[in-house]
Image 1: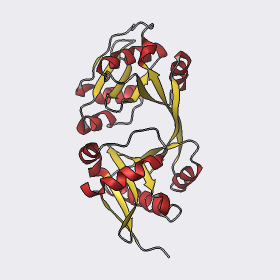
Image 2 (image 1 turned 45 degrees about the vertical axis):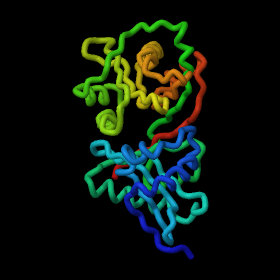
Image 3 (image 1 turned 90 degrees about the vertical axis):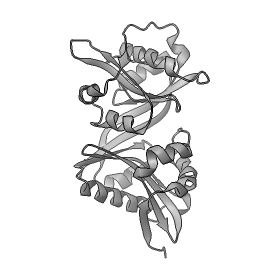
Image 4 (image 1 turned 180 degrees about the horizontal axis):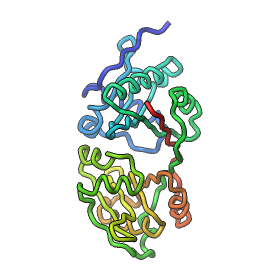
Length: 266
């Protein structure tokens, strides 16, 4: 028999548990630092405990009326004991209580157990995404044909709408850390051709949206000056744009991770 489950907000003392469980995501991301956990993640992280021991972690964001489950992990020793289901139920109820009308998450495409859990809560496939590693040297022989500029906060909502980025995503990121924001105007007057948020410390770009491979290359050119000298590549998350992912792979990028985006009304 298992003891009762307790789900509570995270605190500074939970970082060791978070760091231990993070690699269980099977994603090729580095474990966030303690500083990043405390400043950017802790306020919206939940801890599942049983008999006084941490058995699960969930990190979430609220983007306007969308509840976004960013991370959900059950400890290996507590799998198949209801940890993931308890965290999902808690998140669903929390999102509803604060007025969210939808929720979403990303899951590795081959993780059948997790997909089944999320489907049991009504979430369904919305689109597929790919994370690709792009060596910066691929840009050396490819000219930059479009000028980029910083994203003004006044443009956040317009960019999200034009490029099908989750509403509130850019604004929420501005509250979390000092990232690099770049956009490309056009092709028509008042239109937006591409936009990305770049985290040099990862290093990665997410979201990354471009209307054509040519604009994707121009956007990468705009991010490159902000890369750390020790990084020879950037990880780019390409959501629901297989043509962009395929074009970058054809140039020499490598696929690092393939995920499925799932959504449902609340």
